[in-house]
Length: 277
Figure 1 (tube, helix red, strand yellow):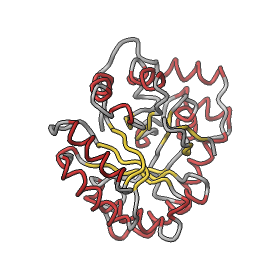
Figure 2 (cartoon, rainbow, N blue to C red; figure 1 turned 45 degrees about the horizontal axis):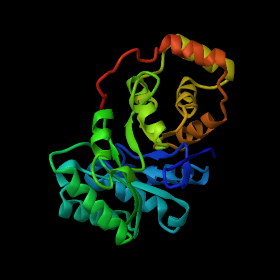
Figure 3 (cartoon, rainbow, N blue to C red; figure 1 turned 90 degrees about the vertical axis):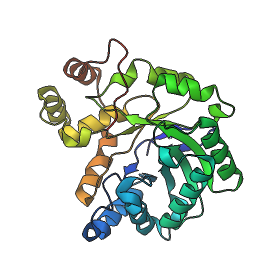
């Protein structure tokens, strides 16, 4: 498993497991937990979830998946902005801990910018870290100006990551946000790295996949994994899908591949608003 290093020096898997849309149907819960366990077995030990996903249902699926093997997993969860007051953040974290049946969250994120002053949220993060309930904190869906503002607050430079929408078809963050984060040795987490499957059907992507004897989705994921300082967290609820995602780590894109994909999915030439799904 390739790794990416957090600002504090801890190495985490470059390829993790997303859980968005998990926990929405009780009938799927066992299969979803099986998929997560399969991914963990394959070295994809970073598991990303949030209190928002299925109103906590995804965190309950995570509880099933990590029960008895908590020490093997790097857990990420998120607090909703409208819960992100000082007391609300602490209460939300404690509820997430209870749903996941764990004592500590490895990385706790503010899901997107909200109306509560950042100083309140940061104070809560600091309290949670002192109390041993979280180990690191970060943000999600923050654009460059919002990151600059965050770093202007006391303790803001302890931020471990910014989780954003990033894939072959959504490259706007390359213009300024990714370079800004790289300059501070802070990795970016890419959610929806496969554009939820909608990226398939492109001729250049299909040709690169043919050259590597792989699928278009595997090449699209390999492209994200090829980016410096990026952690990909695709969601996969089936065992075969999990295994296909893991196989993307073994694809080594060539200069010809990268050029073909750049021509089909051009990088940004100017600042673009941050895209959010």
